[in-house]
Image 1: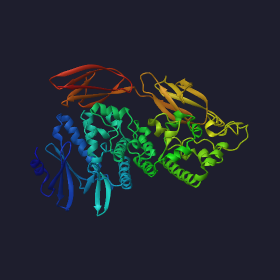
Image 2: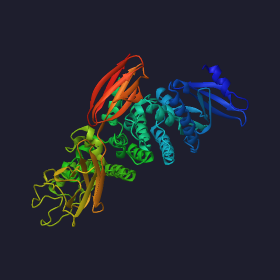
Image 3: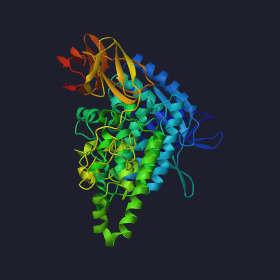
Image 4: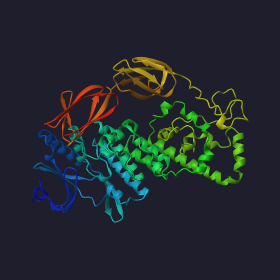
Length: 576
């Protein structure tokens, strides 16, 4: 159907008057129009349903379009583009929505007209608030990208961010991806979206984090020359650290981005607002300087934080923890800088005194690991073996602060001072105890798995394990981790707290992998083990084991047998 036919349908008496064409989308055109009844300018998005060749699929999409667009219409939020009306006629659907005067983040990036960082943070807070609002109402966007974030000019000199395509994005991504045709921008898709898993608001958070990464660095975190390679990168690889691309960025920013870009949804922030709130604190952090690194680096202070590395690495800090950690680190850094400036002339003498005394001379460095200045610039610490582990190590510093060192009798076994060695015991040579004095009282914990027979391992210690159902006795109070392993099932991981968690139930999921099937041209039918599964391109989650794959376009066919390994990502393609 041509543009003239579309205009004839839309411009019905008493309805809408088309003013101009604004752009072209993946499945239709976008127009600027006027509602003459109330004198309101609107935008009308057309969706060409006839491009879906399967009649039953087209009917399902049509019904879902109307349902989702109607549910999007209930989203009344200042930072969400409002949906006014839904029309459907002659294989076209029409979404009538609020007309936004302004530009998208995509065009601002393309034209190098991005506002200053403080203004961007304001926009991101608005976007996050809008996403959380929609998520609370059970609506997921599924296509967050710079082109769908509009900067609206509400008044001269006043601008706000608005999210476009709510509801429309969901209906497209759900139904058409289900049938095998991926609609949207793959660079911004979450791993669970690519793999066809259940999706919640944390998928939008991942996409928003990709947008933030691109805004801050000018580069996308995940890129590749082919679609299969891109999907593999999103699902399996870590992006380059943002501060390595833009050195003015503080390394704390990478801590925040890495969490929001976690491959597993449960490892991300609880909400989009939590993510942006932590980011705003990190963005206020000044970059580390060489003198602070040189003076503050005392590796002997750090190891007590890592008594249980498998626990601390998976700590789920909330926004308040992150904000407090970043804020305290900033405050401590300024204090150290002031001390260095005031004592510059006596620096050599002060350092000598510090090394001759166990800790009281510099209480902030020894007794304040929550905000210790050694953490933000870990390039000089021996605890970080490779840059990719920086974010997780850094976020965990507030998790388990060791006891404040005190001048205590030698009979106490867990102090920060080396026992009976006052003079030759500077911090770097101190024999740091591997753990604090065990808290009084232990507890027994019962473990149940579904199905039974899983091997339970606590704190990554083979000597603390059993086969479920079972009980492990005398576990120390505090946070612990467990893994549950059973042949044919994906490894389950949990964090639990003793004595609060006295019984744990661990349901296991069948091990699976992802098979990406593509064809040129697209639209071929994929049959898995004798049953039609999707149309290309399709990301299929298959159980571990051998499967028979058939790709056919109605005239030719390609058959192959694949062996799916746990958590594997495989591809197959055909060119007709």
